[in-house]
Amino acid sequence: MSFLAYKVGRCLLRYRLQQAGMSQQELSEKLGVTKQQINSYVLNKRMMSLRIAKNISSIINCNIEELYEWVEVGD
Image 1: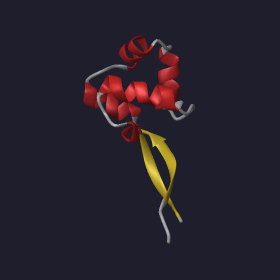
Image 2: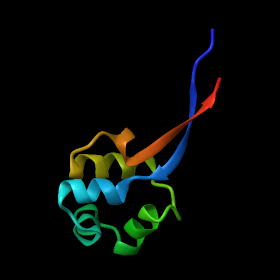
Image 3: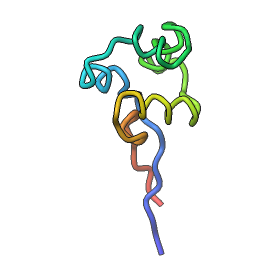
């Protein structure tokens, strides 16, 4: 039985923030982190923890899976 495996691609947070009409600064304030931390996610310099990703998805009203591209790597 084969299945598809995935790896995390680029962060889609910039796009999701635009969809939500929210700035990085606003998100950082709601999340209680620095704007620089949010910017590091947007620029793919840092990977979100599961806790941060879940909280961001809740704040901007998207599914947690929608915060990153998912790249198929085969089985």
